[in-house]
Image 1 (tube, rainbow, N blue to C red):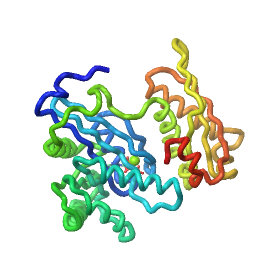
Image 2 (image 1 turned 90 degrees about the horizontal axis):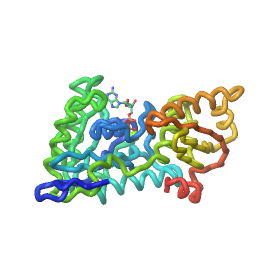
Image 3 (image 1 turned 135 degrees about the vertical axis):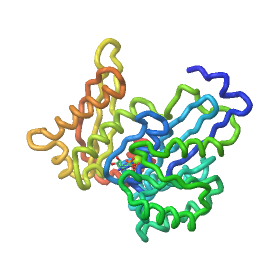
Image 4 (image 1 turned 60 degrees about the vertical axis):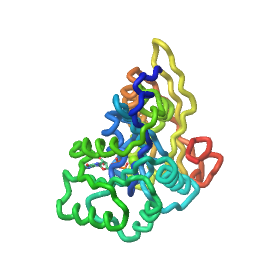
Length: 303
Ligand SMILES: Nc1nc2c(ncn2[C@@H]2O[C@H](COP(=O)(O)OP(=O)(O)OP(=O)(O)O)[C@@H](O)[C@H]2O)c(=O)[nH]1
Ligand SMILES: [Mg+2]
């Protein structure tokens, strides 16, 4: 990977821009749109994103490194505490600007303390009120006014991350406040994660799509082996860890029907992502209470 010469020229700008907000606000959708790539997985269920994931937007004049974060939450176990720590780290240590993304409706009262931590942020905060394609203007304005009064918001945008409305304006505003700095990453790099991570995330995305209730939250995906086979299909072995025996039964389904569907959907999505054919083998394992098992969390990059 070669760095383009303009990345070191005077006047070139680069910086880190965390995207924060409550679960399901559309953070991953926005990151993917800003970077014009499918970097972070999306689902209609809250708490889909589990790690900080970088999406790198490269242009001739600047490099904006967006950090997708798990939605603000109240931690109930070691795993969620690690997620909470990721959010704090992204917001406090790394930011040259911060995007606070919100649903167009006012946040529920019990969630308000979660925004408190943003009061200590010193970098410019851009408020983006999302889902304007389905929102009432009036409600959205009320929500914006609420945050403007609560936090030192530099500028507010009413956007649709799904359809792209006003996202260009937000991007231009971010560019303006980025500091002069050489590119942090080679300019052909769009994320900090590699194929193994994406294979696991794609399987997790399919689990979110196929299963309801607690199953997606109780599942962790571990890539056991990823063999590139030049001229043949890549071979991927992945284990799905669930917290309880009953969840294993749900994932496997009657006569293995659900697991078959999960495997087929994931295999297709992974092949599309890799742009080459892949063969996937899935194993379902019960790892009781993995959410509180430090060793398991560390091994899987969740702590
Ligand atoms: N109508 C509409 N839906 C949106 C918009 N942006 C995101 N969504 C939907 O909102 C849901 C959540 O989107 P995500 O991008 O996964 O949200 P997130 O903030 O990353 O969620 P977590 O990772 O769970 O914190 C998905 O069903 C998206 O399709 C938007 O502008 N309009
Ligand atoms: Mg997300």
